[in-house]
Length: 386
View 1 (cartoon, rainbow, N blue to C red):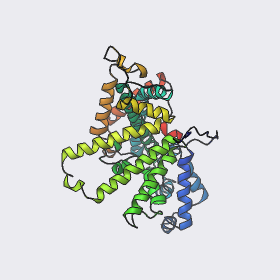
View 2: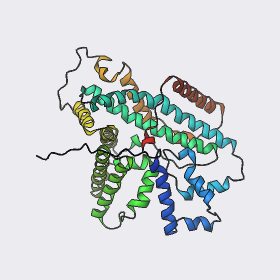
View 3: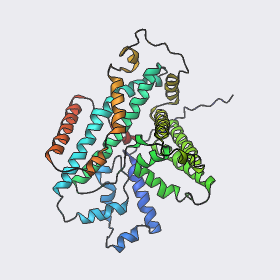
């Protein structure tokens, strides 16, 4: 039997916050300069690129810390166009509207789920194994915490950009509505997927050299996206699992099986169920600080280890290890309904009109968010770590 030691010591190096985001933007800029891609197009339209423009492109603070990963061809013309123009009031109104939604998502929804997720993961990372209900509540709490945390940041970034008259690209589009892993990556962290496609997948050959190499390229991109998120075995496993899922889904499409049932509601529900639960399980490796913690949580979720339930089979006793309450399950159900049934913030922004109704809605969300922020400890954005 192989005696493998996964406790590899990592050097304690102090790095700038969210270094990967602005590094990727500069890689794209330098690569395009070298290949004269998009740069010549900007010059042909009279858009001169000088050092000041480049500095603004790299340091534009609304998206600097956690995305979206912007491309120079969509930012440089906007900086030039706004040089001598005052910011329009409608753009400011839109910005405040979506910023309020994003802040509410973060401090009121995401940070509420963080309490149960952090308690559960802390317990399993220290060697504990929870009962099946605690385990599923822990994993689902993190699944929704990450969703509202990251979508909240994306909304706030777009909102701050609009206040300055700059339109940032959409980075989040209801990913938990996805019916496949491929669709998920078209909806989650959209600009990261765009970067990996343009500067990794296509240079590797994309889908131009046959099915086998296409599958290889899909796996490499997904696997490296895991490593991009962090230097840890959990991220490696998370990226590998997504790579395998991408390969399996592409093989499935090769056989055109889905075309027979594409219009069936039962088939769509089944696809969503498989996709959502795959995401929920793989997020465990993404979140856990060590592999033992991830495995302990999975053991609890699937009953690999027998854990006796409390004698009083009712809440909050059944969620005692994670500090759950009687309404914890209700909040999880509400979060699921919101992610699946409601319009997302981008759809709301597209239909936005500067009227009293929207002003009251945004003001109420902003008020609740600020009150919550003042009485609860600060929890940093999850993507600040990457």
